[in-house]
Image: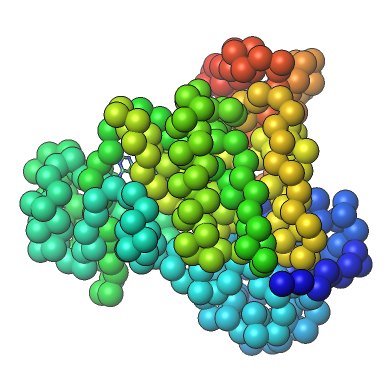
Length: 387
Ligand code: AMP
């Protein structure tokens, strides 16, 4: 199947204007495209790089018409945009990922049901609509379990680990007080040895490119750092890449996808979650891959040939979260980073610091993985010091 190529000079729409949208816009501009950003938050970082900015709610009919009439293709950087908005856009231009894929992935229950129906490994789970059903799920799965809201929720928000019967009681109360119609997924708690993720790029012709498997560490549900390549055996790396590709192919997904995985002690891999967009754990690709995840997103959006995913150097990406940014942007912090060989600082230009908010990241590269890890660990220690 030959897909018409959108030539430089075309206007690419992006739904959502966070740092992922900003990095997409920066790369798209370098490649000669104009970007129209739609994010209701006027302070969203991608607006600063946009040729056209929309800040109304996604439901605004005038903006829907204007946005649809100027863009030549649309992509997204946030999976919680309204599915019907995407459906309307795809009737008028190329929309990647599709609204159908978005519908499946937006809801954790539908996502896990889809994956298990395709025999792709996921933690055992149950769908829950009430406190009574929570108890049934706990009986069925056995403690500990993780209870997550079916929709929205990110960075560990709307998520509880239930280890003891008293935790079940507390979450029961939360469920009882929730709005009617809310649903949750209850999953077996996986005592993983590692969290891994794999970026898979797939175009409209079904061609795929896979980035090397990376290893992620979270703190309080938020990604702290990503190590690439992951410290797994070549067999596990191959299995992770194969499982992630199978999942994106099963979805018939077109775009950039991040498949998050748990590696268990016995070497098994389970899919935790799939994001239909570039991912925080793929930021390293900007600094150490021949083609970044954002350039791949531009390429898929425009029908351009996919790029290679070659890793040029080991790296560790460290997120700068909330108040930590103060030490990084101080004269002392900046000069320390700019004096560190192999450190690349990315700041997102968010005007408000909030706890848990991702304010920037630093990629540390080195000829050997252990050197990159040592430099990154030193940096993380400075972030933990009170300013
Ligand atoms: P999620 O929002 O589903 O990506 O979950 C955020 C984090 O919670 C994951 O990166 C894991 O560290 C942890 N987590 C989520 N689900 C499970 C699970 N079933 N078992 C163990 N840890 C989990």
